[in-house]
Amino acid sequence: MNDGSMQSANPAPPVQVLIIEDDLFFRRALTEYLSLEGYEVLSAGGVDELAPILSGTLPDLILCDIALPGQSGLEILKSIRANPTTKDVPVLMLTAAAERSVMREAMQDGADDYITKPVTAGEILAAIRARLLRLSGRNGSKLTVPEGSGAAGVTMSGSASSDGKQPHTNLSPRELDVLRGLVRGSSNSEIGEALGIAESTVKRHLLKVFLKLRVPSRTAAVVHCLGNTDLRALVNTPIQKVSAPAPAA
Image (cartoon, rainbow, N blue to C red; front, side, top):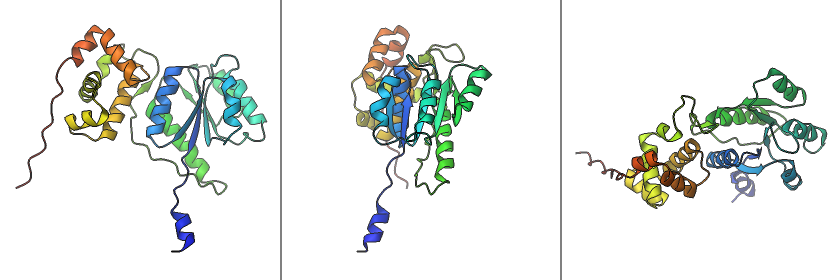
């Protein structure tokens, strides 16, 4: 067999994204979401955790919050741009501030773009993909940017939804079904079998549940259900077993 053809068949390494965000929930949820979308994710809660990360393999893109403890995101951005090793890495800034002066300062300091919270997971993914696709068309870059799968409506923001409802009231019927299975201790494959959906689809529904309830894990979701009377009542009903469709005549 031709060695060249074997080499060309080797898959490209995953695109690596570094998230710098002190909000632990937001960081974990976004890490999980981007991982499901095919990215390799590194994360740091602030400047103290950056040195060992940036001393290794450079990320393909950095997503950095502006409001960070210790050293602000703007200061970190300046350091990244001043370092010959990291100066060309694309940086997207996350900010809850709507002041034009803050956004203008970030762009002047070398940010490639900024994203204003509240923001949906899909909007963050779209911004990352747009910047990486632009990069992949320059300088002979061989980045293989993952395709988005579309959890676009899940808001990555505070505990209240934009319409003032409690987070659990925004769960879809399918998300409630998945949450029911989770509370009963079912695995993803068992939930998928009960609902007649693929395990990968169960994972995506679970991620949306975590984001809407603002919890970082399966255990935290169960604890949240047990501590919320209204939500406990919603999930304390049987999962509707989905029958396989009858074969075509």
